[in-house]
Image (cartoon, rainbow, N blue to C red):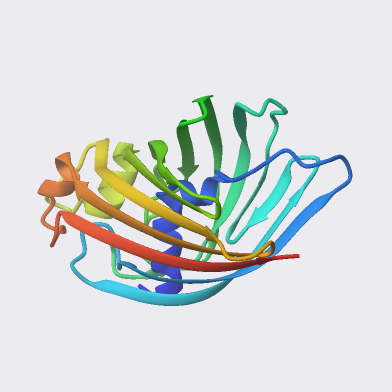
Length: 239
């Protein structure tokens, strides 16, 4: 798996790709930023191998709710500051199929939702499909997060969550001819995100996520390691 592919696979299974930071902009305005993102992530779910990457990222958000965020684009339909939801499409850069052949780039479709019942709690969900290696399956990400330290220019937030997968996804990623994997909870995870507003236009963000495979994904003969850790650092400049 190429570094960019590993990055895409990680982002599709995390809240990062689902516009968690979307905001309500004044009518007719646009928010544009560029970033450099570096990270170390598992080469694939259940793999003991790790991949490092350094990628550019482009971000844009319009007052009508449309946004582009790295490999994802979509539209926020809600005008309620407590609710954020809408459709999205992301670019999957390809992966190794179960028969050993390589699958090229493809669009991945989905939807996202964020709900803030109170200032200190964010509830997030997004679903994407097709998410499996063979062009089928669905993956659903659920997460609850809260800030634990807040300063004048820096915030530390933590979260807990799980990724749910249907049988099509689990079989394509963890199944074999002799091992039939069923759907359910693919993994549970904990994460931490530190954000530092270095200046009015420059932001540094560091993220760490640790996950543990569950159920048929953990028991699969294709799983070399149940636990996985991903680390990302992003330097963003807004215009």
